[in-house]
Image 1 (tube, rainbow, N blue to C red):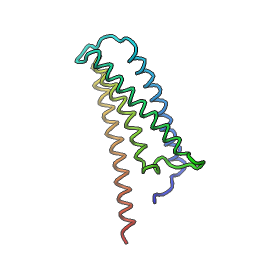
Image 2: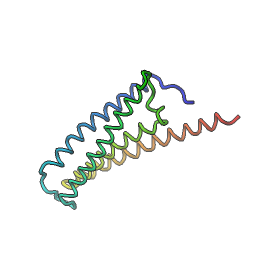
Image 3: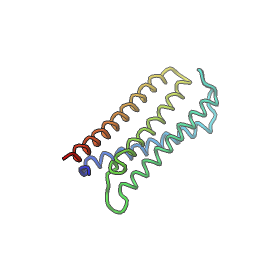
Image 4: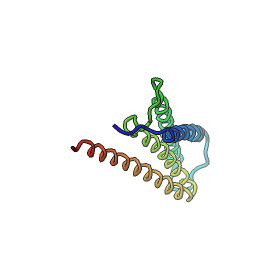
Length: 154
């Protein structure tokens, strides 16, 4: 099996999940207000309905990120004993939660693009964030697969 998680890693993961929860609550509440409220018409390439649809998609992604982070925090301490979030399905859940939060902000960047060119910069930053999180998750999986392979060889 894999080496046990040290306390500093567990604290970082807990901090990450808490931050995802807070960002998802904040982003979800803002997008929900914008969905049901009246907005000024977009100035470029998008209809009013397209902007509402994008906001609805962002709200859904924030809701999924919030639910995933909450579930991961509950499962990490289930049964009275602490487990690493990475030990729950080899860290898959941890990275997916981060990707949902980043994807929600990415969709919001597209909404900003409907009103201003600064949306391109926000979209580029969010895209880089998604690439970084995905690459880091894949690297960890490959490293674990290699460790398993080396352990199984005599």
